[in-house]
Length: 433
Image (cartoon, rainbow, N blue to C red; front, top):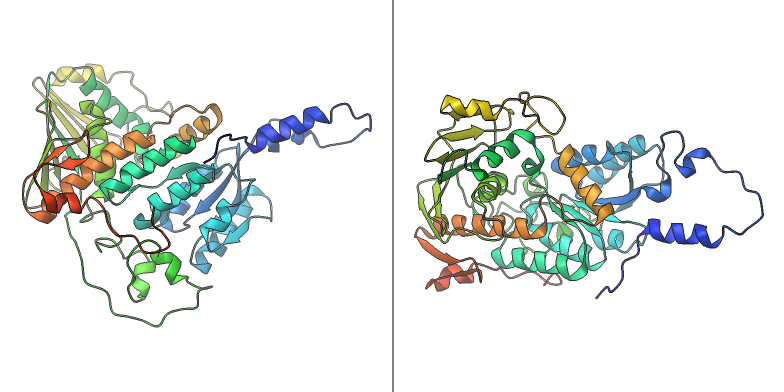
């Protein structure tokens, strides 16, 4: 177990103090000391990226836009992704020494990396995050952050044990229109909450394997590392090109978490259920329901929205409702609630409107600030854990085709042995946690 964590910046600062007595004159460029608007290298957060696919590159752009970030390493099991990401990072960083790795354990072993961005396939997120925590690295992990209920709990326990900062990639907690909708619900502006609604996909689960194809050499695509903790199956190029979703071994459960990790998370926040979850779940076709202990109903549905953008949420109270989505626009009823929106601004200082719902920049900035000040970020591991457990329990009710009663205090389904067995999965060696 790590007992002390000294950052690279602290070590450099201490070293500078120790050698300050030297009388030998040395000429250094001004940017080394942070002059001219530049950030001194010793004050930059050094990062590595694990998983350089589409979502990883999207997040990478937001990190590279921050002036206090320096990427040092890239890891991906696919050679073309490693090299493409290296070209992008070195162009933005203005350097030529970004290292490439096929195995993320080699990246984590580096002492000069402060934090990692994890954007692999879903089945790797929790394992990679736990390994990173064991190496003392702060973690920004894409969602879903863990693909079973038990793994959710193991993840947050590891984050606490090793004292690292963790940010789950549910960026809508940092976006203005969603924050305003939650704020109105929590302040009672809608009256007593009755229902909270989360936009989700149509549900699907696949247990069959795709046809076997010739296995590429490990340097081109490392299939064994791509599978990681998941059960072995023959190689098929569709998996590694992103078409693994809904396949049970790689997916969190029936594709539910894809949007629900965002939208159920916002509902949890609005209800004040961070750290908890609904106590009852049931399904009707592709609509999943949950009931919180305080009587508020959670409704997760793919249709019936007002067209305000992806990842929509709707909060309904006794006196009114509010709905918003990735367009940034907000709909409310009754009209008197519009007065609550006057002079509200999003986190960029712009009035609501415009398609900024997918922008993760504020969420990334929140993470980096917390890496420096060691405060808890917007989507810390406890928040992530409870949201994901709620999503898993809901998906299991659909997969098992029955109502499930759940105790969120001990993560246990009541009087349902099969559901409790599905809280975990068998991990392939050597990836047991």
